[in-house]
Amino acid sequence: MLVMGRFTLTVLSIILGALIAIAFILKGLISMRYEKLRRLQAINAAAKKKKASSSSKKAARKKSSARKTSSSRKRKK
Image (cartoon, rainbow, N blue to C red; front, top):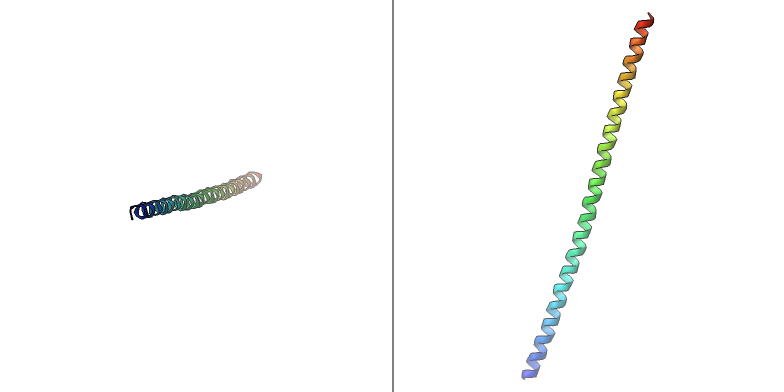
């Protein structure tokens, strides 16, 4: 009877240890996935910001070139 009790406790402790290990592995996998998503979102946000700033720079260049051409036209007259 005592041997059966020890055997049962050993089996239960092994099962419990395996469940805890599986839980930690799953937690690590899930956190890695979320970390990848966060990194991708940060990269996308930076790319959008860079694209927006470059488009605003292009618009500023167009405005300045339009001013230059209008001022040169005025000088020609």
